[in-house]
Length: 73
Image (cartoon, rainbow, N blue to C red; front, side):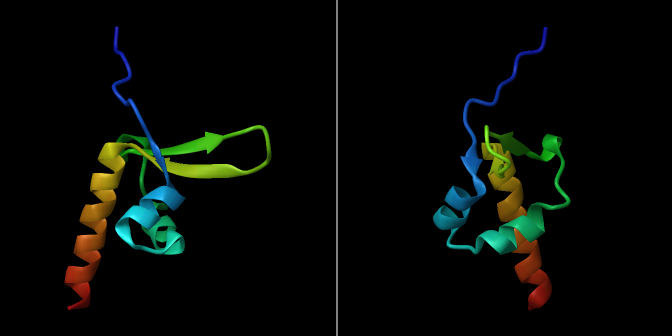
């Protein structure tokens, strides 16, 4: 039996604040990510969905940011 090893997630707003990035920029970077990449959609009781990341997802975002910066130079 496989057990879920994800013990926490952070919302895109929280990750953006911690990384000093704009939420919109992170959203644009994350749009191509899959659940295997550490991205999760969180649904509440309202019609608002929240994008969130596992620790692995934050690592992937950091790599994507670094690659984007390298391509701009």
